[in-house]
Image (tube, rainbow, N blue to C red; front, side, top):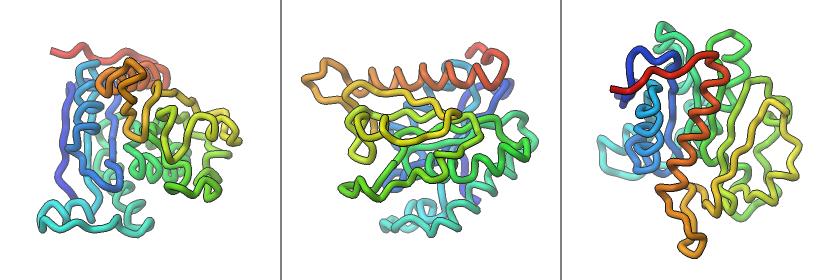
Length: 218
């Protein structure tokens, strides 16, 4: 099992378990900003890496993502390891969020998680808008938040708003954001502004399934 990165108060009413995207690990600037932002709001956040990323870190050689079965089992193992931490929400960046969403209903129906969070969901591969990854999202039963950049190349706003998604899914849009919520300069916004907005949206979402308020930081 990979090493973990944890931040936020141990007394948080919810633990948020986040996985990284396909190309960057759990300590990427994006993951760091989201995790620390939520920790500053009083939530406990734990990040982990899939086996291929752990091997990449130790060897220094880039490796492609593991097979889906391995990714799913890795995420499931992390949930099992946190079974004594109280209420749990799972999610992640891009591929990590997709894997979380594929597991979500299984874990939710077993009472093992409260909700799911996808940060930049890869609705389709780059340049292949007809190869949708939405079948399970149409019947999703787990309360789920998807935060998406308005011009995400894996699911732009004008595309996604036409998809038949479950009414258990909330969509939030990062103004002029790309797959990592980075806006163009002409938009008048910055990457940091969109990351902070994403943290605020997640904070509001977490307060709903938690039925309680986060622990005040510090």
